[in-house]
Image (cartoon, rainbow, N blue to C red; front, top):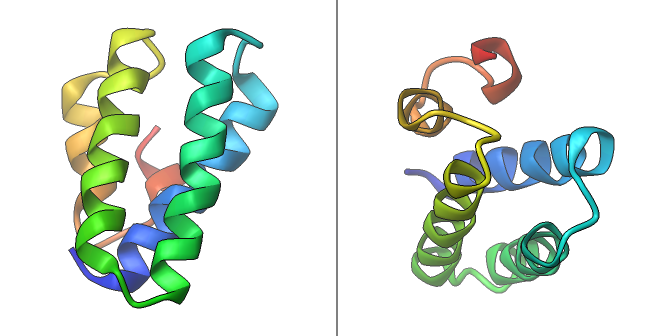
Length: 85
């Protein structure tokens, strides 16, 4: 995954949780982590950003926001994450 793709997906998840997410502990923690991911990207720490994004994706799957196939599609280079819903 490229640095730009990680940033794109993180921003998409922030917007998604803002618009459709519940106000639960997991969702609030994911929002915090997504903010941190964007900071890691600015610091050129893409590897850490990707690991943290994987954690967020696991949470989104666990909370039934997305299927595994949808999450896998978000990571693909072609297309935008919101095109895949």
